[in-house]
Length: 129
Image (tube, rainbow, N blue to C red; front, top):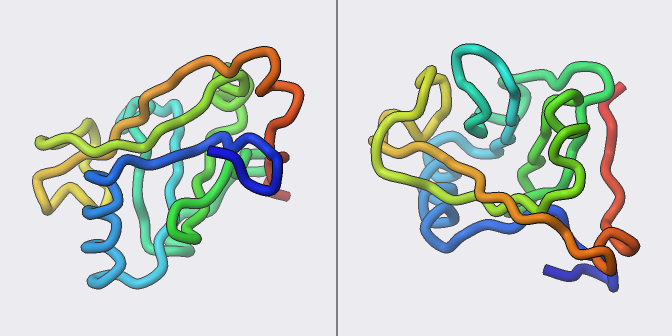
């Protein structure tokens, strides 16, 4: 979880990595976006890179296999004190816009609060312009 003495905001399960590798083979470069919208709820969505454009001031909290993981700006304000672990489940999530949907899978995030010590040493986020 640590990178260059900084605490990562994001990790991934082996099961999710397997699905990501399968999607990489088919679609190439990917990106993730987690919104708080009506259709997809707060399920993270996977797109081909450039298939979705983050809004101004959305937060990129890290990468998975060099694929950016973006969070809606308002959702990030709520979850900024939490570590995200990307996982995958069998079944279809709300909306069905994400690339894993045809595989009968849906990405899911598990959260845990950072400790006070971790909060002092988090990796910086990137904001969209």
